[in-house]
Image (cartoon, rainbow over all chains, first blue to last red; front, side, top):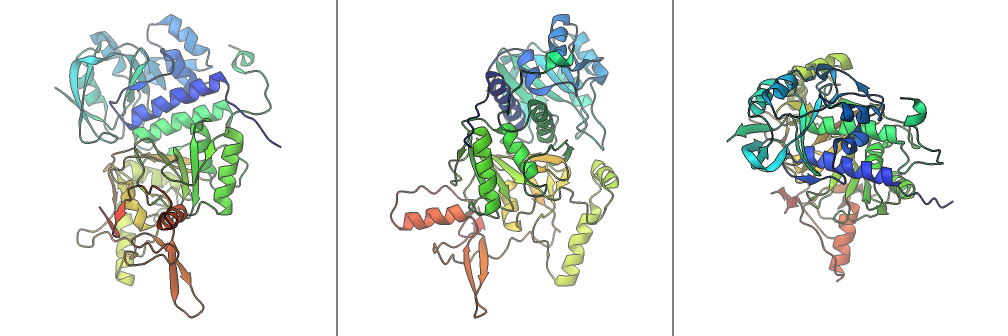
Length: 181
Length: 303
C-alpha cells in the first residue's frame, strides 16, 4: 500500500519554526529567520497542555497563548516566559525566573523577549556552539539585564534566552558566556 | 478553553508518524538537551512500530526533525544495508516522504547505531545516535536516582576507578565502546556504543549530535563546537583502536576503522566498517566520478 503523506501547512510551519529554534540554540548568536514573525508562531511549535507560560503584562498575547492549552501562571513558576526587557522593572521581574535544580537542570524556564538585533550593546559570546568567539549587537534590552543574567546563571542551572526581532531570532542558552563590551 | 478547541479534524495518519503533541514534547526536550550539553533530559518516549532497543530513541528524534526535503541516512554498525538500518530508512521514507540516501555527504539527518561515518559531517548536518544505555554511571551506581545526584554534584571519581581497574588488570584500558566522555567540562556522558575510534569526532565538531535512548527515555545532545573529552589519566593518553595499518581487502583503503573477518586458516581479513565509504572508494578506483568527502582521520591519525 502506497501512502502519500504530506505535512499540512500547520505541520510545515511548526516544523520549520522548531528547526530555527533548535539551530538558534545550537549556534548561539547566529541570526535565524523564522517562517512567521510573532511569539504565537514560536509558542505553537513548542507549548501545549503540558506546559505553563507567562506573558508579562500583555493580556492580548496571554489570551492567544492560552489557546495552545498551556496554563497561565506567575513568572517565577512559568516554563515559558514571553516578556519585554526594555525597562529596569522588566529586568527585575525576570530575575525570579526558574533555574532548575542540580538533579533536574531541565526544569528551568525559557525566556522569549523582543530585542533589536544588529545595533545597540555589543556583546562577546563564547561557549558551546560558538566557534572561537562571536560579537553581536543587541538593542532594546535594558543594560541591567546582562549583569542580572550573569548573576542568575550558575551553570548547569539557569534559563535559556531567545531574542526575537520581527522574524529574526537569536538563541542564547545558559551555557553561553557573555562579555558586555 | 475546551478539548474540542485543541483538537484538529480527524485524519487517518499524522505526517512523520508521531502526533503533534509527541513532537512538541520532543522539541522541548531537544532544546533543553542542547542548552545543557551532555545532560540527560528525561522524555516520554512514545511507542513507534519497532521494538524498544532497536533504535526507537533515534527514530523519534528523526521523525520529529523530518520534513519532505530531509535526506536521511541510517547506519547500523557502519553498514547502510543491514536489516535494522534498511527497515528504519524505509519506514522514515514511507511516513515522511523523505529522500533516502547512503551517501554521508548528501544526508541532512544521519541516524546511526554504533558508528560515526568516516567522512566529516558539515555544519548543516544532524547526527542522531541511538543509545542503549545513556547512563555512564550505571556500572558504579545502579540506582538511577543516586546517579542523577552524582551528575548534579559532578561526582565522577568512580568512573576513573573503573578505568584504573582495567589498567591494573589488563595493562591497558579495555573500555571498547561507550567510552565515558566529559562534555563542556561539566557532564560526563556516554557517547553511545561507538568505538574509541569515533569519540574524537564529537570534539569541537561542525555538526549537531543528538543522542536518544528510547527504552531508557533519556535524550542528550552535543552542539557544534563543544568540547568532548574522553576521561583519561594524565600519564596514560587516550588510545584509539590500532587500525591505522589495516587495509580493507575489498577497497584497498587503509587507515580507517575496520571490521575483522576471521578466516578458516586462523588469519583475518579486514574490511571498512563504514560500508558506503568503502563503496565510494571502490567506485572511485574503478574510474567513476565519485566525490569523497574530507575524512576525520588522515593516514590513520585524527588531524
